[in-house]
Length: 332
Image 1 (cartoon, rainbow, N blue to C red):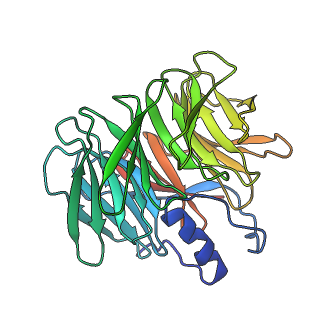
Image 2 (cartoon, rainbow, N blue to C red):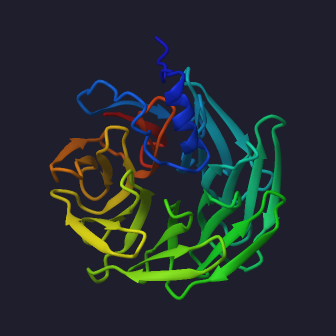
C-alpha cells in the first residue's frame, strides 16, 4: 500500500509556506491548533541514492526538499511519498543547506572546498545556476532568506557571513567568532547564527552590522537556531545538553534538557512546544514545553542519525537522517 504524506488546505498552507521560504515561524493564533496526537516517528522514507547523506531540508506547499551531500543532488519527497532527484552540474559539490528564495527558486550551499559556491535551482525549468563565493574555502553550510529579500549563509571555514542577491551577486562579512554554522531570521529582521567554535550567538542586520553574544555556559558548542513564537531565538548546545534562548536584546537564558545527549536539530511545532533531536547514544526526540518546562522523550528508529529538521506543509516534523539514508517523519 502506498503511504502518503497527507495534505492540508487554506490558511494552514499559507502559513506553512513561510517555512518553504526559509522562515520557520510557528503558525499564528488565527490557525486552529491540530488535535493532539501521541508523538511518534510514523514513517521513514529511504532515499533512492544509497549513502547519499541527506542533510539540508526545507518545505514547499506540497513537498519536502533536501540536499544529498554525498550524492551531489537536491531532491524532493512529494505528498504521495515519491522521490525525485536532481543531480548537480558538477560532481563533488557537496550541497548542504537549502531554502526557497522569494523568486520561487531553491537556493543551496555547496560545502566542498573545490566547489565553494551558492547554487540555485529553478523547479519550473529544471535549470541550475551557480555563483562563486569570493572567499576561498568558505565551507558554506546554512542558508536562509533574509528580511531584505537576499539569501544569507554561513561560512564555517572562514568565519564569515555571506549574502547573495537574487542575481547571484555575493558579498561576505567577517565575524570575530569562529565556526558559524546554522542561521535563522529573527523577529527584528536580523539574521541570527550559531558560532559553534567560539561559544557565541551572532546577529547581522540588513545593514551588515554584526553583534556577538557570549553564551553563559562555557564551551557549549551551539548548533541549531530557530525563531520562537515569543519573538526570541532558541538554540541547542551540543556539548552541554542545554536549550538556550536569546532575546533580540542579547539576553540569554539556558535550560538543561533531561536525558538529551548532544542536542542538535531544533524546531518549534504549531502546538508551541519545541522538539529537540538528541543525537548521542540512542537517538530520541525531546518535547519541551516552554510554558511549563515539562519534557518528554520519544525514541527514533535504531540507526537513525538526525541532521536537520523542518515543520512542513502538513504540520508534521520532518528530518534528514544520514544514518538510515532517509527522510524521517515525526508526528506530534
